[in-house]
Structure formats: C-alpha cells, structure tokens
Length: 328
Image (tube, rainbow, N blue to C red; front, top):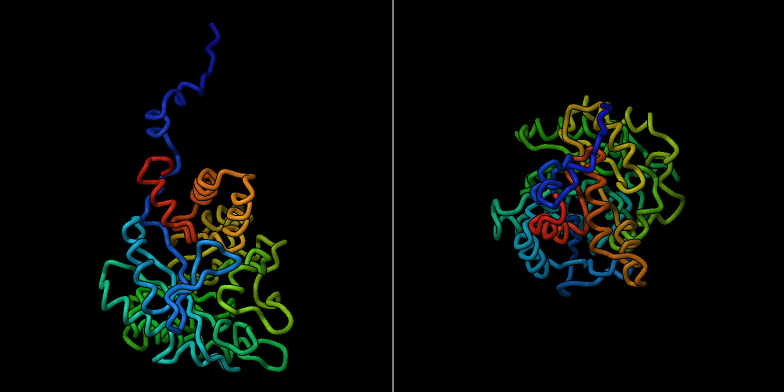
C-alpha cells in the first residue's frame, strides 16, 4: 500500500509545534537602538517614529530601566550633539554626548547593560555626510583617522563594543589597529558591512538630525540592486578584523542576510531600521494591520533568514512576546 506523507502531523497542537520549531529566538539576541542628546528635556518624542524618543542624560535611565525589566540588556547608542562642525569633532570629544552617556551608564548599571556605540560622523558634521569632505566628495582615507579616534574614545569611556556605520573602505582595519595599539585588543567590532543606500532611513535622519545638506550617500553606501557586492563587503570586513557583520536594512534585504550567513564564519546581525518601524506604526494606527502580529512575523523572518542578533526599536515588545511564548 502506498504511504501517504502527512506533514500536518507535526502541526497538531501548540506544544508540538513549538517542540519542532526550526527558528529559535532569545531576548539576549535583541539590541535596542537609542538616541541620547544634550539638554534638560528628559525625552522628546520623534515625530516620524511614534513611541520613540531622544533622551537626555537624565531621561535615559527610565528607558534603560524599562528595557532591563523587559529582558533586553543590550543597547546601541546614537549621539545627538548640540554643536556640529565640518570635521565632526564632537564625535571623539572626551566630553561629547556619547562619552558622557557611556560613563554615566557604566557608573549606574555596571555590567547589567551591554553598550554598543554607533561610530560615524554624520550626526556630528555640519554638512551631514559620514566623513571629511574634499570639495563635494567624502575623502575616504582622511576620514579613517577620525573614525579610529572616535571608536577609541568610545571604548575609553566605557563602550563594550563599537559599530562603524560609515561605509568607508578600510575603516575596520584602521579601527582594529588603533584599538589594539592602545591596549583594547579584546574590544569587539560590529561592522555595518552590508549597508545599502536606502529610503528606509528617512525617519532616523529626522531623529538624529543627520540628513546630508547636499547630495546623497550613494557614493559610499551600497546600491540596492546588488547582492554580490554585499558578500564582497562582508568578507573584506571579516578579513580586516570585524567580529560581527551587520546587514542593514532588514525587511527588504533578508535574501542578503541569508547569503552573508552562508559565507562568513562570524555572527550576523540585522538592523530593522526606522522606516520599517514607522511603516508598521502607521499601518497599525490606521487599523490596516495587527501591530503585535506584524512585529512577531517580521522578527521571526529575520532570524529565519539567518541573523544571530536583531537590532530593532521593537526590542522590548519582542522580548515580551518571547517570554509569553508567542515567538521564539
């Protein structure tokens, strides 16, 4: 008698479905992106990202407490300075906003929080580009020294990990050499290795005040038509000393996450960016989608594609859903 194959047997009941689940998730893999700013106002809501805020040094502790309570113990810090100049000198200033935030977090929370810092110039330059300019072009090689100084200042102030997001050629090697030369051989680097020039970044630029004052970033961020180029960037950064490779954005680039996962021997992160968050929020506000279900589905998709870590503004909600057994 011919046997009937019945895959549905393993879908019969919630307990069995969870037992045979292929994609496993844990709150320890979640990273929450957080904006810190100068000033006395504890929290300023970001208009294009409802429910997300720019936090002052005094105001950030309430959010950090909420993250820890939810089970999220890793954050990525983005600084919003009061002063900007052509060089972006606030990025490596000993008394810059990120450096002050790091010292305060490490004093108040010690090892409770794992703190990663974004290393780039765009939030700090008066022109909004990710490096030093030569005319209207970003000077790749002159920018490397500034990125290295910035990364070193972050580690010296207490960062557990640095994450260069500028997309300059050779910046991972430059940062690795600088950290090693200064005795920080064990400080890891998460490289935004595969970062596309994406329209999904729009709300972030509103949040951080980092939109370029002229032109765009297509000369250094990647063309979204390309996938082999992403593999090239990932492999180069691993060779230069990157400990973790990031793909950004997440939602529309999960094929790239899988391709990168297949070729690198280091952990892979995916960043669900501001535009993805804003789209879900807008759709939910209009009643077109179920926000909680969409959060769960998009998160699982990123892990299913192959990411080991997930950067998302929905980190506390996802951690809650994991604890409840809705995903993970």
